[in-house]
Length: 116
Length: 107
Image 1 (tube, one colour):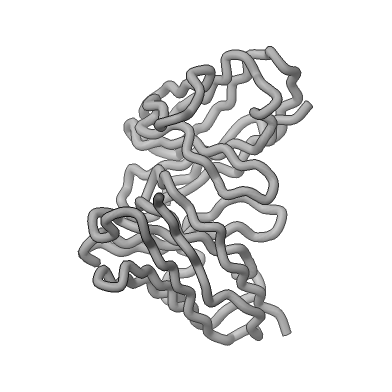
Image 2: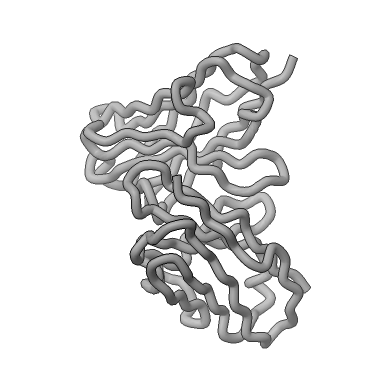
């Protein structure tokens, strides 16, 4: 059974940093690109970042470019999102998802709240 | 980046209705278009990829069509389980995947 489990979300002050993790199981992790997608409370889906299987292609939404860094460790079957210079508008539930587009499996998400 | 615009934003329908949701891209995305369904408190569920390919396990009442800049998601006969919010997503440029703003289908 495919599982994606996120962790690392918390309450953080504006300007602060946070590192999210996603642990995968039930599939060959390094066969797939992976994404982070977020959803602010009561709002729609926003793709945040994607990384292909061997780190060769990485990109970010304009809203996070220069502040967030996506990475992966295939040996640990893990995906990461390093978030710096956090803003109130980054408050959201962050999901990791299998695939860079048309993601077929999603984790339940980890909540990030940016507030003073 | 490519902007995706869905219409309508909200759709009121009844069980048994044929429902169509439109998604327009600001530039061509070829067939690299997916549709997701999301219910309150749940993760998004992939329905269709490559504009018209039904994902495994998705009922055949769902169908997708289109290419280039205009796409549609059709539910041939709306069922009680289909009341949800639907999102289109383009993934044509490997970078900067984008979602539409969502269409809420309610009673």
